[in-house]
Amino acid sequence: MHKNLLFKQLFDQTSGTYTYLLADKSTAEAVLIDAVYEQHKRDFALVQELALTLTACLETHCHADHVTGAWLLKHRTGCQILASAGSGIEPVDQALSEGDQITFGDFSLRVIPTPGHTDGCISLLVNDESMVFTGDALLIRSCGRTDFQQGSARKLYYSIKDQLFTLPDDCLVYPAHDYAGRTVSSIGEEKEHNPRIGGQANEGDFVGYLENMQLPHPKQLDIAVPANLKAGRPDDDEMLNTPDWAPVTTNFSGIHEVAPEWVAANLERVHVLDVRTQRETEEENTGIAGAQLIPIEELRNRVGEVPNDRPIMTVCRSGKRSVLAFSILQAAGRDKVANISGGMLRWEAESLPIKHIS
Image: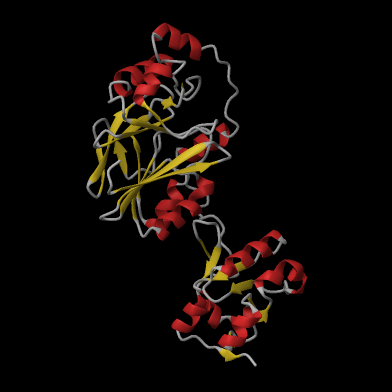
C-alpha cells in the first residue's frame, strides 16, 4: 500500500457489510465505498476526526441486504453519489461506465464492470493495481449469489474469470461482505482456493453450484432494494433524528460531545456533572457554576444522586475521564448525556465563565 494512501475498513455487524474509506494523506481528499444507512454517523465522525474532505460515496451495486448511507452523507458533507449506469440507482451525480476513473488527490479508482450478482455490479481498482474492491462479485472464498435482481451465474463466471482473475496475483481483494470474520484476500489466493470458481472449476461447475444453492432471500430485500434505488434517500427527505436537547456531535468512538460555548450559554437548561477528584478541585479551585461534583471513582456507586430532569453534561480537567462518566451514565439508563469537549482546559481557554470553589 502506498505510504500516502489512508485506508480504513469498517464493518456493520448486522448486515455483514464492509465500508471502505480511502484518502490521499497529502490532499485529504477521500472517497467512501458502500456506506450503510445505520452507520452514517460513524462514517461522518471518522471523516471529521481525520480532517478529510469526502468527495464521493461510491456504490458497487444496488444492495439487497442493507440500505446505503450515501444520501445521508451527501447531505452532511456535500459529496457526490456515484454508481454504475446499469445499477438502476437514480439520484446519482455521476453514472459510472467501464474505464471511468474516480480521482481523490493523486490516487484513483478504475471502474471494472463485473455483472452477474446484479446487472449493475462494478469493481473498483486502485490505480497501482494493489487493491480491488469487488462488491458482491468476488467474495473471500465465495462469490455473490445470482438468483434475484437480474442475476446471472454465467455473467458472473466471466466477470470473475475475465475481469478480476486477470489482475495481478498480489492484488488485494476487499469484498462488500463477509460473514465469517475474514477481512481480505488476494487475486492469487482466490484463483487457487475459491471453492466455487478457483482451481480447475469451469463454467459448468460454477453455474451448477450457484443454480442449486436454494438460499432464502435476504431479510431486508423488500426494504433495501427500493430504498437503494433512491441511494438511501428517505421518503420524507429527512435526516435521521438528531437530539433536540443539545447540538450533539458523535465522534468515532460513539461518544456524544457538545461544545463548551453552548453549555456556557445554556447552563439553566442542563445539569453539569464535574468528575474531577476532590484533590483536583481543591488545587485548581475553579469550576462551572452550579456543577455537581462527584469524583469519577465514586460515580458508579452514586449515579442515583445525579438528577435526571435535564440533559447531563459531563466534564473533567481535559475531557478524557468525563468520557468514562458519559459511558457510566449511559449504562445506567441515562439517555440525555453528552461530554463537554476538551474539559475545563478548553472551557478556560475559551474564557468562559468560571466560579471559585470554596
